[in-house]
Length: 142
Image 1 (spheres, rainbow, N blue to C red):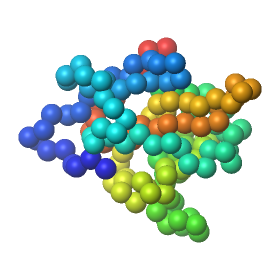
Image 2: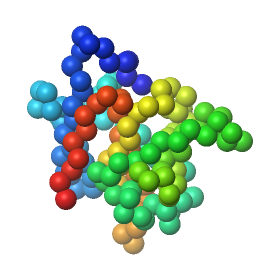
Image 3: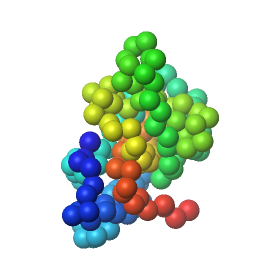
């Protein structure tokens, strides 16, 4: 995950700009487009979503919505597992990928960024923005 913020660095500010299936990122300080591989953030594909397709249909996972990251140290398959829930922690949609989860600090913000839809129009996957706790991420306009 990106290094801790310090008083010598400016707080990361991100605008969410609507795209066809979700949001693109723009650095609010510079106005420059941010790539999904920008070292200050992580953009990950939600893991395990295919096992929770019914949950994924909930509007709480629509692009632009805040999400909750919940560590699962008692997870029998992976003690580093980080579950992804809706902001109210009532619906579980999947996991942060196993190769990313151990590197998280535990205080990151998560936002549903981009959705994948099947031929029937149902949501079948998500890309999720993981941003530092002190970053400002614009709330999208309805």
